[in-house]
Length: 217
Length: 231
Image 1 (cartoon, rainbow over the protein chains, first blue to last red):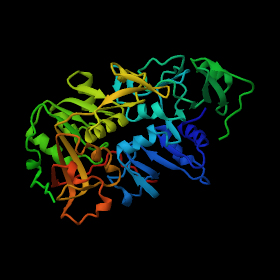
Image 2 (cartoon, chains in turn brown, blue):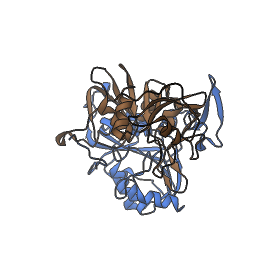
Image 3 (cartoon, rainbow over the protein chains, first blue to last red):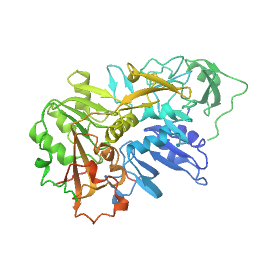
Image 4 (tube, helix red, strand yellow):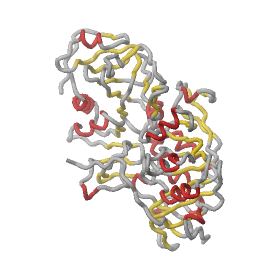
């Protein structure tokens, strides 16, 4: 079973040379720590920066330089700043190559829910609806089950949707899956996790074809 | 040159009344119009609708107006950092319209640019699409969103000149340029106010035509929400 950093490490393998990448809040943010250093890429943060760098030193901290999680950051050489309309132009216009975000639930048709629990938690969607409404390449980073052990990979979402039929790939603490013909397809197992355990933790229909390899991390 | 300067924040907010709709720039606490917000608190303007990506934190930014129950309705994309906000929303005291961040930005830009409505894929198939016109373009469904209508836009810029030309800094730019000229009156507070000619016209982000009033903010606390440093 992977921890959050393990999920981030596995997702980092999906990042290719020349990619512009948008990272959501939470596990996705960790992905930046594990990307190979022999490729060229730029991170976009939807509040208005391309070429986002690591956290600053104490001296470099600047209230006018934050990421979408409101954390202080730095700008790398070649970075640019822009307004929120242009930022979502990059997203809606499909100029961003890869979007990585968290979720509360994913359904086997690619629906995603991650912004609201009616009557309990209403934080808002932020940029998530714009991202999932337009991105070609969306990877969801999340735990396979919620805190009480229920599956987060479902036949259909029970929570209010963020987007419909948009998720292409899911990386959890147990598995890598993609979505084909409105079903989850198991691609890889986390180290030490069996196909049976994944099956048990997956409420949605799961396609299992041949031997399922263990993730290389 | 048409001079847009006013002497202070009090003059800048002349004409602000109860029940109005305000746009406020900023993302989180970065680039918020701190001085105008303080003045709104001081004047105790009531029953206002605020269009702002976030709602501040409990004791800073729009959180100050929330605490005094001055806000009737919030139009935002993300409100997660504010406990008082969540309490007022769940208890029904506060009306809340949550909309996608890109749609929020574009509804400002549409108002600024004289575009009454536009189509976006964001939110199609979700509860925010309910009651909205849907149209297919290239086989993909989009929903119609309308330009905002607002009485005042409160904007924070880094540098400005007396003609109202503006330059923003870093990610404090965010929604600020999009709100200029998107309301009946645009009020801008700047850290540095200079004479015309001192800013290079090649590097102006927002031309003064979109600005009615500009003043140098008395104080900028520029509070940081999540101070993160490298280990």
